[in-house]
Image 1 (cartoon, rainbow, N blue to C red):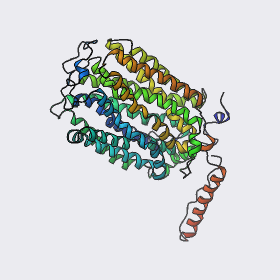
Image 2 (image 1 turned 90 degrees about the horizontal axis):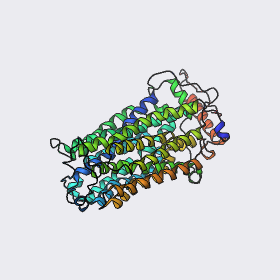
Image 3 (image 1 turned 90 degrees about the vertical axis):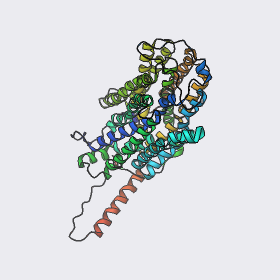
Image 4 (image 1 turned 135 degrees about the horizontal axis):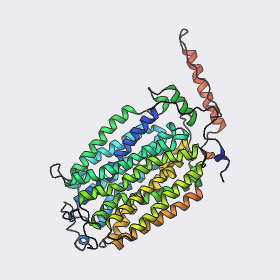
Length: 516
């Protein structure tokens, strides 16, 4: 049953509908945020493919004893299954390398949300990606001259840079996304991440296989340069709030500010945040989704190559196929979620519960199926695609729920939940490395998939029990705080009038309606 907060109308009395204009300022923000996350995931996942070419797989004991359960699929070459790369790293070392990014990533989640409130989300998001891009350009040098310790250190630093991106963008949408557009605007921008995977995996495979372009180092040079170019455009095109935007229409600015309110400097209620059951409901959904997605993200190319015996170019393309499905679902599901809410079919809470449950339970069934199809290459690829694709439904669940329960502190909340949900980023690859070390078999990977399904089910239960759909009491501006804001605004207006020349007209805005 919906509580009192859930029964409140999503559109406030007197609030106008979306102004009719094809491309508006918030849509431009969504496009460049989309491209930003596209770059973010290109920089993050290129190593998953490049590592296959970097490692001398004929050297490791596990590959010398590799299972011959599956033959290369018809039409695909198997001549490159054993790569003669430069580095002699076993599966556990490779798991450590793939997970090292997330050791840095976890450290800047909560600070990222706080810094976005303090210094501005636009700059934090932009410079976070720029730092990662520069470090990516230095990756081949670090691996060849510095060895394993320096290589891992660079990956940790890249994680620190990227760690601020999601909290910063959530803080941006806290200022820019009208209530009835949260799911689709945020969902669209975050879907850029999956398109980045779709693009970077096959392109990384082609670059690694190209001796003309220099092999695996070119992967880091191409994507690092892409990040630098994106940064320059982002700083020119995007603005912190609607009030800061020089080209926004008056109608759009009024529409956004009437829906979400103007940016205010508020104290962060840390104790109430951490003791809120609604926060821990989001943590459950976020952790489970990330466990599955990060396990696929870092280890899927290895499974495709070592078990299903696809060559590196096919590996890159086929590893990207599930992310085409994931991207498509994430873009579409935001519109579905907002439609269900705006037309009164489901409350916000029940919409989030439905989306999150579908996005976790469907993949749970699919990954169990993968573990039992054996060497059937067609069904393995189909089930992996459906598993990862259907997990995108959670974009209409936990991922937008921060904006529902605390829009003014959404960046801080995402920093907390994404910080905890980053643990699968380094724990997952390490666990896969331990389970499959000297055991590259279908039975070994079956354990990996069953563990993933169990985490999905656990996350579903936590979210359904603890999630909430209405803005929490601790996240609302108290009446006395609203009066202070109005009083300060009026003082500023009077000062402006008194200091203005006698012949200058002064535009005095109407006081904000405290009920909004």
